[in-house]
Length: 172
Ligand code: GTP
Ligand code: MG
Image 1 (spheres, protein in one colour):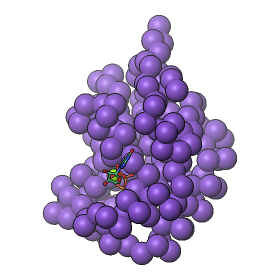
Image 2: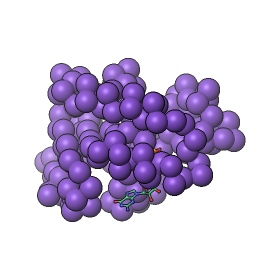
Image 3: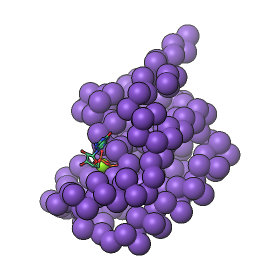
Image 4: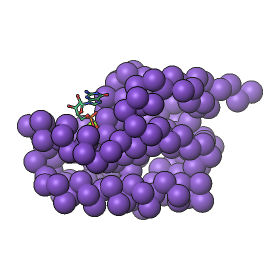
């Protein structure tokens, strides 16, 4: 499956924990193109899992995204992006820099994500948290277009995700 992405865009990955966002980002982009919420929580709080650091972490993440977009650099945001307010911040940052906001949704069965999550030492939340994320994801998918995302790619299942190829569209 070919995923068309404008050469200069702000790409929001959207998916529940364990859906493979960070893995996908690592396969398709340079590490410097990917801004992950975990990384920024680590920067501001010495702990990638410290959810109480999220507000500060996202403030810095948006700041860096803005600098990158102002310099014409494609930027990928690796966070769950399951909340409308989180996505609204990204759409705003993209618009401020005249850049297209793009959403790539990784939609894997909750059971697959849970199996992976249980195997990770760095993730300790319980299954109910993941179920809530799944509900948020279902709700999110239908809202992305009206939120301002100009391209929306929904990759359904592990096979579609692993077969995805990014193709860059020139804007001029
Ligand atoms: P959060 O950061 O918690 O939101 O999760 P994430 O969406 O970034 O998932 P991540 O890419 O970290 O993947 C979760 C786990 O699943 C990791 O241990 C990965 O190695 C594994 N994983 C990701 N993609 C695949 C895949 O395509 N196949 C298999 N077998 N494992 C995968
Ligand atoms: Mg991740």
